[in-house]
Length: 120
Image 1 (cartoon, helix red, strand yellow):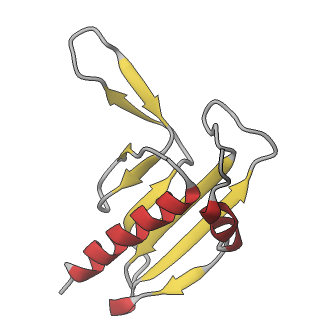
Image 2 (cartoon, rainbow, N blue to C red; image 1 turned 120 degrees about the vertical axis):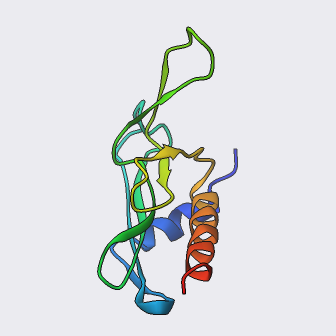
């Protein structure tokens, strides 16, 4: 299995605040766990957020808390997801499939570009 090329980069970004267009800013938190857990099988806790000039979160990708989602079908119960994204300030979170730290960064910055591009 190949090492996730983006993991070291993600961990190096921990604590960074990155200025963006229109007075917005990004905050990145990422830390490696001592061991993998059921909630975090790849062993990294992360929270990547985009904020407006007043500090309101516009977008976020994280695994800091669980979200419960309904599976399709009548008797399937619920699926618990820790990896999720908040696509707007009021979004309680929708599941995000974590493939790698590199893909996480790519997906997050793609969404940041969309949000910033849609602002007046």
